[in-house]
Image (cartoon, rainbow over all chains, first blue to last red; front, side):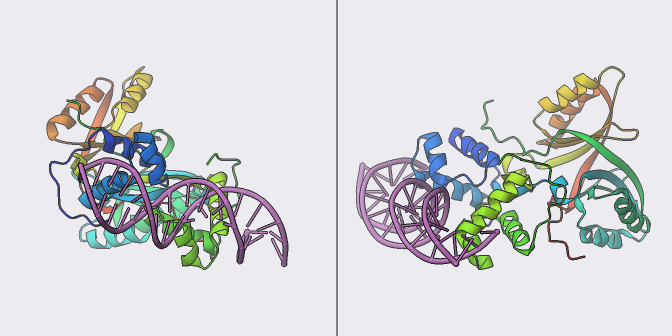
Length: 159
Length: 159
DNA sequence: CGTGAAATATCATAGCA
DNA sequence: TGCTATGATATTTCACG
């Protein structure tokens, strides 16, 4: 599953799109079942998957875990702006806290946007205390999620 | 893979954690290979997976696609505050734009945080124009991603 | 790119510790 | 919860259009 080249001009055909949809829905579906779904042979499905993996279109097959079941019922979105000279330290701290499940460096006033999942308010407080030594923070608690994380559009071009 | 009950007190044991790690890394790994990795039989691994699926710990097996390969090299994080009386319309619009790959409703001044992937600046402009009819927006462009989206911690409790 | 067929590996279930 | 054994499926490779 190593990316062989940056393919600027690849685009899925109708079959690829359907395969991606099937895998998006359940990445453990068998090749045989996908083959049946699109009326093709298993070997050709296999080749298509290999191709998409090697092109880097498919980054990985993975799990979506339920945070609540694992004891993390709450999520916060935190904007951070590091204090002068603290950038490296802040990046290291962020990478080191497993409850920070995503962090982007952005343009504009706030430098980082982080997504933090937490078990209780005291735990969030503890994490924010650590971060506050290195950055100004602005925290919002997630009340609901109108759009759950989904993949980029992968339907074939019908322009 | 239907969630049977909200299990407040479940927590993975050492074997479960290793299985989750294997699946997190590659959700298409065979049951037999997992069994080998943890020195157990395939049927018992199968049962553990079923249990975690039914408990709702494992939400789904899915794909991680590479946005760039699919023509979406850019990401923006947008904070939105809807205009009076426009909440429902805004939520409908957000759900309808496939380039908005995630959206949370939060406490505080800004009501929504959205993640938008886009192909070009004109496309982002177009999307923001649509949103701007219903809400104030504040947009940041992602420059880099120090922590890529990862799952909640699932190592077994070693307190 | 696609296929069919055959060797190998895997999965699912039943029966039992 | 776990194991072994087994028949049914799935995967993968190959020669070929």
